Amino acid sequence: MKNSSVRFVNISKHFGSTVALDNLDLNVEPGEFCTLLGPSGCGKSTTLRILGGFESPTKGQVFLDDENVTNTPPNQRNVNMVFQDYALFPHMTAGNNIAFGLELKGKSKTETAERVEELLKFLELEGFKDRKPDELSGGQRQRVALARSLAPDPKVLLLDEPLGALDAKLRKQVQIELKDIQKQTGKTFVFVTHDQEEALTISDRIVVMKEGRLEQSGTPKELYSQPESCFVAEFIGETNMLSCDITGAENQQVFFEWHGHNLSGKCWSGNPEIGQKAIVAIRPENIDCSATKPRGEKSVEARVIQRIFKGSYTTFKLAVGNDHIVELKVSMDGRHADSIVDDKLWFTLESSFLSVLLR
Amino acid sequence: MTRNTRILMSILYWAFVIYLFVPLIMMVLMGFKDSNFIGFPIRSWTLHWYTIVVQDMEVLSIFGYSMIIALSSTVIALMIGTWAAILLGPTKFRGKMIVFALVCLPAVIPGIISAIALRIFAETINLSPGTLAIIIGHTIHNVPFVVLVVIARLNTQPISHIDAAKDLGADNLIAFFRVTLPYLKPALIGAGIFCMLISFDDFVRSFFLGGYEPTLPVYIFSQLRTGMSPVINAISAVALLITVIFGLMAERIIRQN
Image (cartoon, rainbow over the protein chains, first blue to last red):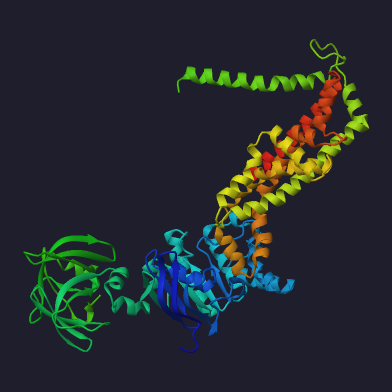
């Protein structure tokens, strides 16, 4: 546990009778772009506010660079926050907003002015120094807020859904910019969002939270391809959830029965037992389909009940079985989709793409 | 709304406006009449009454005295009112509504009652009638207006502003002076001008709490008792002008923000 930039040990936070955080343990490595992801009310913003010092935990400890800061007020912590509404001071110019933290740190006038110029240049805000926040566009305000938080050179930068107010197109562009800025500055970023797509795009590591607890953490790829729970599988990306009965287990490899088909997949967390009911997740793009019945493979016949052209790919809705119809979402690239002309197709569920979920 | 009702309603409205303004216009006009007697017809015009006002050191010093009282009671009311507004703003505490009601009470108590009460109170604590007593009386009356205006403004300030200031290294005091106070500026200016007008205009409190030196309304009242003179019209017209200027300034500043 050495060398963490941020460490939460057993943090709980209660607001009256509601539990916002429940024994949360969290580690953020130095220089990491770490995203706290979850639906509203999962405690991600509370986590960030505790880290910033705006809330104190009911229980547990917070460490910044191995220094216990649990009871340190925000003005004495070496972290800075970009607020959801940017919280720019409306009576100050962009330049003065950026300089605010530097002045309070006791930096000299020339030092402050130099740093402000440097940040204005870095964030491409030259020429906007003397504008008030209400004379700036949403994207510019967001960059001023970022510059203001970066100015005092914090150890960790906290970002509370800072892209929420931007329109979809600008948002995509700023995501990439933010990632670049994080790389260039080499700072630890802790970013909060409820948008899974944003989290996948921007993060080195994602921490998925649910009801005040850490649900799963890992790289975007790990979370996408190795979900440990139904919540993670459903929350991140599109997925098919199939109910199955476990028939055997060998380490992580789990054998199960699904509608008369004997299949196998990986279980990333928990202890599968024979006879247990479980959910198997597979991504729409990982279901292999063909127009004709493949030979020697365990293929399943299905009917196409919906077909939607989405440009670079096409989505299908398939129905399997006659008595208990199971619907599957499948997506294929254009060429592959064109080969399917009938309402009937065969698909296979490849064991390397199947995740067996016990919770 | 049909065309006819609209016409009827606008006629009624303009009738009301005329009813409001005719006395004022009369007052100003009579101040320019070249005669000792107030009333129509006006045969010739003069600035004589105004020159008397401008040359009368007593009247000028009374103007000044009223201004000093208005300024002092406004400044004190702004400080107390802002403090109370911040106390009553975001923080929750037991009995908050009671404190709020108490703070607002002076605004709804009839002037004559609060004037008598203040007079009795001043005598109990051996405070002789005069400038200080009037300033205290006006301040008490002004505070609720400051509190209401400042609370309204304070409620529109995002909490994140204070969080951001603290995040950047400010303690509570610095955050207040560098972030909250500038945010409150338009409310403070608006409330301040409003308080100046209330104080400048106040008769009852000044009358009950005053010493030998009268404020402007008290002086005008005392002059009236010895008979109407166009000089009073001139004084009133000047007071009206000052009031209108202040009112317009307040309106502009509030609208700008």
